[in-house]
Image (cartoon, rainbow, N blue to C red; front, side):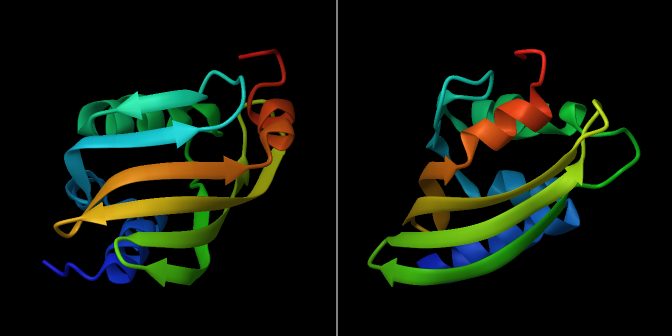
Length: 137
């Protein structure tokens, strides 16, 4: 297992892009905390690997049109300092409401012992609300 924080984060985003559920789960510590902004159904702190992978990340799949893939692409990891890495990525797809989701996201990742221990995500929550939750969630 690679323990370089930048590599851990880029490998995680690559796993998301290819839909590798095992690699996604393995990327996180048992006690991971993911913080998502705003007042959306996804907003708040998600604590623990199961909550992050199944309840938070897993719930997103049901928001997109069945049979289509959400396209995730890493824009870059412009800052890596110690155990913290800043990553920017894009997410695109068609929602179950027929809307086109196209958003840029930024996350501050903290890596511990080769796994992601924390993520603080920043994104356009207005776009998320209008495309993913047009009826309020």
